[in-house]
Length: 399
Ligand SMILES: [Zn+2]
Image (cartoon, rainbow, N blue to C red; front, top):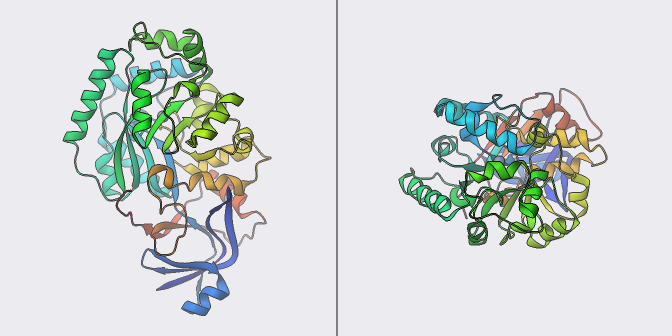
């Protein structure tokens, strides 16, 4: 048994806020949490704690990555909106061969950024072996797109063949089929895949989606012609309204361009909105309206998106960006966005639950005693401070 005492111990999220105990202690049996609580109570049961001058916290969740695109880090300029960015990404991706070493390096960086569970979106399943070797948990969203019957039919068949040929999954990992986006995927298949179980979809990332699904216009119209938009064009009141079948097991990724009706739709569906603010800034120069999303009572999580869109795979880096952009939102309301293991099928990740091995991190304080440890943590992480693993995540079989 190892007993550690820390000036600040984050244990979990409760009521949308990070719970932080001052002068607290943590009892560990190997990687398993036995107890986390006030120092006096933990020491009374387990004996004197070894002091650690650090902020201690549960390991993190990165709910939206595209690890197979890691070879394109820094290669796809942004700024002009989604349609232009997708066009450049597709060209660069076709020109650069697959690079397993870049995927390995990206997975290794997830560990440095304190990540124990991911929501990985993939066309090729390329990151599966690296994720398994690294002991990461979560969900691999196997993405299909195509608007015409011929395009989506071929995509679904190809994806199924890929899954049949895939190597075995590690504990704590699962693969589920997912639609790419409402603007790129046959509406019937969007509804079917979302309703079928856990699934992820990109939605409301850019105003161009609204122009396309409401009027068939805008920069996405030209791009989607290649996917069969002349045969089948998604159409609805808004992009979010086109995501029929959305439910509590789904991830709605981006959530930048939402009107009040969309917010209510998303809240009623119970889906988790996954925010990727640094990617949004890179691609389109806009951020999700965090105070409005929090005010609407939505379930929120955070993801980094791919390395061509984001400077790193650090969930705390994303939260630091939100803290910078929305100084009125307290930092202890941001941290829970990186602790939603449930939304990626890794329920033990993101809380120091007794009997579980969620992964435990420490960030050295260097003698500092900040009044707001959550804000300090985000600032330190944004400044490149490295998280240390005190205990590793031990995934259970995925639900
Ligand atoms: Zn994405």
